[in-house]
Image (tube, rainbow, N blue to C red; front, side, top):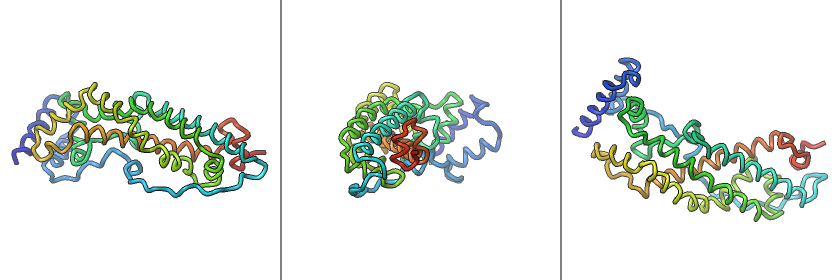
Length: 269
């Protein structure tokens, strides 16, 4: 009861100091219901597609190249297309707002704190909150650059057999290949960058301030947990975007500007 009273006091302060944050009495009422646990919890900001546990995909099987394309052409053309796709993914996610502005990959608060996303957003707009969610997304955006060299290395190491299996495989065969061959390495490479970024924007302190005011969730997440949480979400975002790029290449291979890619995916002349 004491913890809920504290949260109620914080919310009332926010509503009093920032009228723009509470657009109407109904908004305020809904907010207080969420604090007291009598209303519907706000939906998590992160898309379910990025939080579904990954399953191990089976090794690619040997396949013949498309008609009129040699095995070496199929391999070389695919690697070129995937290299450009990887560059686009990193450029999109690594820019300011790359995660924060896309609801599919935006990183919300972890675990039990997720139900407070709406509240903390209101507090931030009222000048009371510490901008914790924004800090988490900024850390992910700063770490995504680590993905590009790892993706390029995975592409370079791709065998002709791997490439042919990808060409003739499903819509996200290449993405599945990357996740299987360099997914753990990606998280390992991003972890120290995420940790430094979170420290730099004082995300750990912001989390401590919020959890210290509510004994029900205090101590749920330490520095290591917060780092791992953001790193995993950042990795999920990379693979989500890669999957989209791959599907687009297969849907419109000539859009890559390469006639060879068009031939590889059966759209050439």
